[in-house]
Image (tube, rainbow, N blue to C red):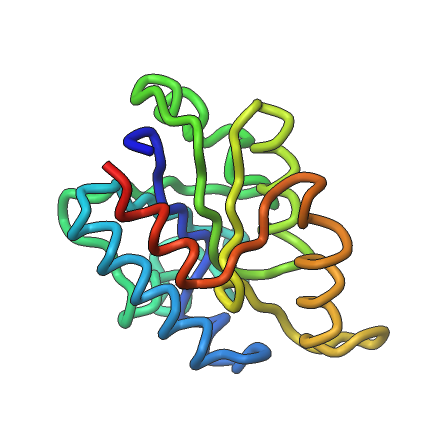
Amino acid sequence: MNNTILLVVDVQTALIEEHPYNEQNVIDNIKRLITVARYNEKEVIYVRHDDGKGEELEYGTDGWQIYYEIKPNNNEKVFEKQYNSAFLKTGLKEYLDSKKIDTIILTGLQTEYCIDTTCKAAFEHGYKLIIPEETNTTFDNEYLDGQKLYNFYNYKIWNNRFAKVLSLDETIKVLMCK
């Protein structure tokens, strides 16, 4: 499993400050995965969304910054995006291919937007995907609350179709493989 990376998508200050579903568990679990990945020399790659001028996630603003509890080290890659997909016009696929990456451990925000789109794009590009439990989240909307959205996407849409949804402990074992 040397060809595995941890991908952290859109865990940005403005979004976390709006308190998504299961917020603290998600942050704590992502932090744990980052620590294990770094210790086991697995690359941690970040993706950050820019919504444009005047928006909550405007490039360069405090809200646009990667949340301080999981911020990247100086040597870790950050890809900037303007679409729901972490792959569209970011150079991420080319970078992963240059490193011969075949497995992505996907975490971040928001479950039904950027995580869903990134999951399906990665699947279409031929990557194996692991989505650790309680490492993606979203907000209540007028149709479903954040917990129902999380459960629906993780267990009805993604698991055994586009990805393997694994426990945190199972994912850590994957990160520890050399």
